[in-house]
Image 1 (cartoon, rainbow, N blue to C red):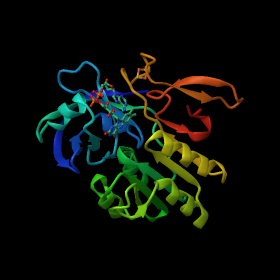
Image 2 (image 1 turned 45 degrees about the horizontal axis):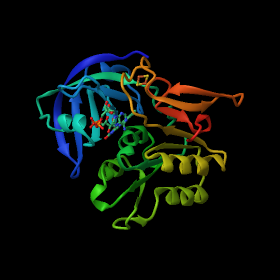
Image 3 (image 1 turned 90 degrees about the vertical axis):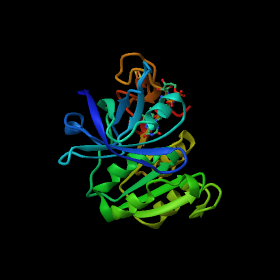
Image 4 (image 1 turned 90 degrees about the horizontal axis):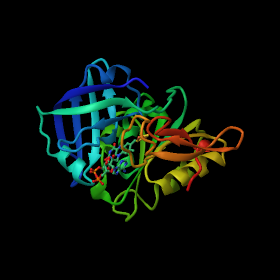
Length: 257
Ligand SMILES: Cc1cc2nc3c(=O)[nH]c(=O)nc-3n(C[C@H](O)[C@H](O)[C@H](O)COP(=O)(O)OP(=O)(O)OC[C@H]3O[C@@H](n4cnc5c(N)ncnc54)[C@H](O)[C@@H]3O)c2cc1C
Ligand code: FES
């Protein structure tokens, strides 16, 4: 895993809803080897441990990276108070990312703050991507115009029925997989959503890649803080690091607990 520490000036800051922020930063080194689905470890001033935030999107030629994060506690609160012109101190790119193939028909399934890493991953697919997003309510929706601008077939579910399908995003997934062919499913979101997504894909023999979230400390495979139980090809069990071996895993490897 080759990563770099970089101070990245914030080019654009936007507030997407009551608790979610988007930062577009200038990068010269980290962006050079970046892949969608990887993450960065961001330094929140005054905190020893960095905070892991997924790469939402990036452009190597233009030299920018976009992060979208929700304020959950002190660290993300400190980050959210940064302004355009300040810099983000990041370690990146970390983790293994999605292996995408824009020639395939892919379905992307995102829930809540698991949605951002799917934006960059689905971009190259244009109209070949079906993007299914689930949110608590209309007020929690993020990035929908960005997915539309990329040409994706976008379908939305809300838990309270305030927008789109009233129910879970995994119900939209079952419908989509029954409706037309699909070569691969990519998912990021809460664990119950990932488990149902994996089951829907696996029962149809479709490859499914899931991005897992575990509490992290070092973010580089050194502290054993982010272990998750996985299955080897021979069926035996082993622990792997979400930060180093993931966060993206083939769903068939994951032992859901
Ligand atoms: C690979 C990965 C990608 C992520 N991508 C995003 C993203 O794109 N957008 C987004 O909003 N959130 C993302 N998260 C979750 C985000 O890292 C946490 O919300 C954030 O670390 C909370 O920090 P805090 O100081 O605000 O909260 P606190 O709860 O005060 O955090 C205390 C400590 O716990 C760690 N921690 C807390 N929650 C998590 C968590 N869920 N995962 C890992 N470490 C945690 C923090 O690093 C810190 O050390 C991601 C997590 C992982 C593991
Ligand atoms: S966070 Fe330290 S090993 Fe993964």
